Length: 111
Length: 110
Image (cartoon, rainbow over all chains, first blue to last red; front, side, top):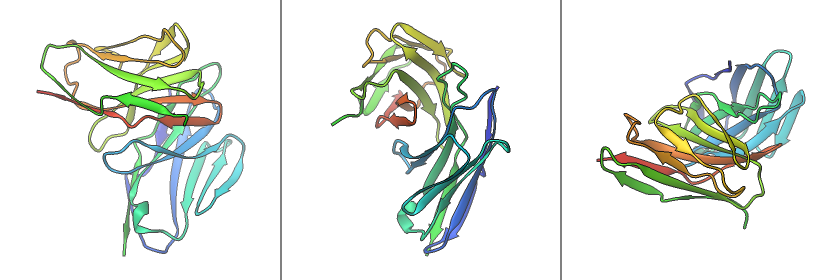
């Protein structure tokens, strides 16, 4: 089976840095995705990691450690518009195209 | 512009009626997915399809049906057997390192 864990909620201050963690236990691994979802809207794609290490994309970075079953999303220079839910999803691979999501982390950015 | 189109955006259904949600993509992606999201909850997988004329049940397939007659299209039917169908339904498509969502359909049973 697949199990993906994220913290339920986090709060951070405008201008600060926040790290959102995701741990996973899956029957295989073929990549990890991060999405941002504002309330009432569809998720938007942020990043994809399949190899260990850090992928940087502007203010957002994503890190993966396959041996530890661990990823994090790092948001720098937080802005009020970053208040949203952040979803971690894993593609288990091994011939399966299944894409399984964690329950998401609701981030509140405060002034 | 390439993307995924879901329609309608809002849908109201009477109890006991079947209803079909549309999902079309022009990204040439092989894999397509249907998810359900309840308020304050994560995404739960209903069905997914890897290729045309093939699809697999996800975690909550009961009360739903799908078809994949064309690569571009993956419609979801919510049947009367689904006891609690009111939810936000999201369609997605994926190829290797990319996976994108449609805008979603908010279904309400009245």
